Image (cartoon, rainbow, N blue to C red; front, side, top):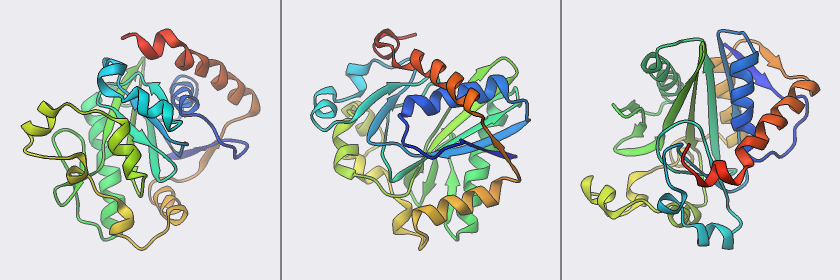
Length: 236
């Protein structure tokens, strides 16, 4: 599996990386490709979710947290520079197999670090009974995109206030707060975040695929679709 890199290191919006996944899936023929990314405080919600039901819009605006919709299903996620986002693009047509491969890779990395991580039937990854990673995916002709979160550290106040899970959802799991459902890797490993990212890359990838300036420009064009108000606010 090759690691996809950009020609220049610069801060990008979350929408850019969603567009990058899509571009890589459509235009890079390697069977399996992988990359990681981090963003300034943002929430990202699934293709079938209503913004106002999942996101505390007033809180996000007050605290300068950006809001985006993705093309995969699943729930709403908060991300910031302490949260590593993982993108896996594969030629595997079977979505369940693609999910299993991705989750298996992340579990492998964590176990190599000495962390007793396990996967669930919902494609989450737990340490003990607390979630450290969640995943979602969608399918394009001939390609499957699986993306996930990996909580190293995060602004817990933003995470708890930017997303508004229903009380019914919490009570159905016998959980009184979001804080009781999650954990962060910083509490269970000694590696700092840059070293962790290097470890993930060297464990999973051999070789790299550098995108050109022209390809980055094409990604930026795709990104514009993710920024349109009608895409963010209307169910597709």
